[in-house]
Image 1 (cartoon, rainbow, N blue to C red):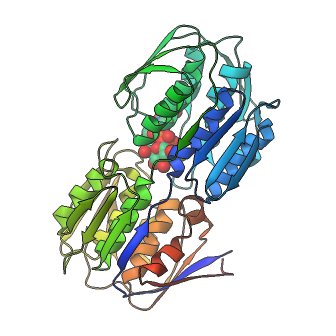
Image 2: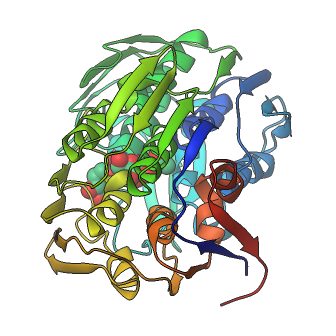
Image 3: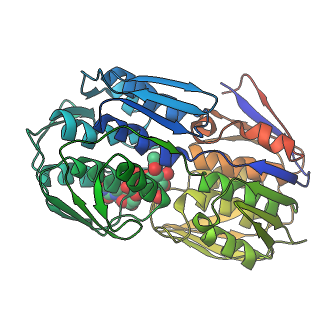
Amino acid sequence: MDKIVISGGKKLNGEVEISGSKNAILPLMAASLLASGDFTINGVPQLRDLKTMANMLRIIGAEVVVENEKMKINTKNCNCFKAPYELVKTMRASIYVLGPLVARFGEAEVSLPGGCAWGPRPVDFHIQGIKKLGAEVELENGYIIAKAKKLIGTRINFDIPSVGATCNLLMAATLAKGTTVIENAAMEPDVTALVEFLLKMGAKIDGIGTTKLEIEGVDELKPTEVNAIPDRIEAGTFLVAGAITGGKITLKNCEISHIEAIIEKLKEVGCEFTFGKNEVTLIAPEKIRAVDVKTTVFPGFPTDMQAQWIALMSVANGTSSITDTIYKDRFTHVPELCRLGAEIKLNDNTAIVHGVQKLKGASVMSTDLRASASLILAGLVAEGRTDVLRVYHIDRGYEKIEKKFEKLGASIWREEGGL
Ligand code: UD1
């Protein structure tokens, strides 16, 4: 297994191009199953999760080709409506094919994703929602088996906003008979990007960017072409890298409105910003101030930046508390950061971080995608050598991260071998 090695202590400086958003592209790929024909998604990075979704679409019968960041999907010959356990267990977002398959083909057999590295992640909203839309659903041998001659518009009100369930049921509702209202819908940019894509396909949806989506089902949708939105979590990760190393970094191809909560927190920390068209420059202070963070749904501070924020606070001046209200067990990076010398105590879903003068390099283990990012960030400031093992997690969601950091002046490389 590959590992990433960092010789810490370099200030980062320069420009970095932000890639297309994995979490926004995944539902677009699934949405291509809603119509027959040729789709194009531009700005698609080489990421393991996107390859997994491409393989999922191929199993269903679609052709998927990616060249020069252009993904072409042809959905004319889809004839297998099963998402097998072997793929779903490697990527939970595979469940996105449930809604489109039932809506267009009347049937789907999708493996239940099971747990996640940091704890349970239920899919009950997806299942309840597709049932409310009129599908007959059975759970058999670890699979969700859903059937419906025609989905029927309904009212769905989530207890808490879910990005995945909003996207899944939104896709399903576009081909349902009548009107569907989704209340307490997630407002993340990934959902908005999907709504825009579906509108281009001919769907009828009101309430874009709000918590109430109203979908009037249509008989048929048509293929389309779209540009992927920039990855706000990759953008946030590079901003934190600039801050933690005391550097100056310009992000190119970023959407400022998607990262405002992160920028506001970084301002509190002492960073200064200048803004251009689709770009932002961060200038780090001499010393990072300790700043509390609570993750919430968009436009709040994202849970996908919680691990990176803890890394930053590990070297801040003072004590901070970081609470994750979305995923309450998502703290597997904490003991690994402590191996680098961080002082962090966990109290339920809150991490209390006492900033230290210095982190010291060590071997640490990635446990999931964002945890890996936080360990790399810590490695960038740790004294000496840090080996981040099991780096396949990072390849799920960050394209060539070590190359991008190297271009910014970090001493970082990938090595084969390790646990
Ligand atoms: C997506 C993102 C993930 C991010 C998360 C929250 C993708 C591929 N993944 O995950 O990176 O961390 O949003 O922004 O886009 N919930 C239920 N039942 C359900 C579904 C969700 O209880 O059926 C709960 C979850 O446990 C969680 C909350 O709802 O507490 C939000 O989860 P959700 O927005 O669904 O996350 P994902 O879409 O899985």
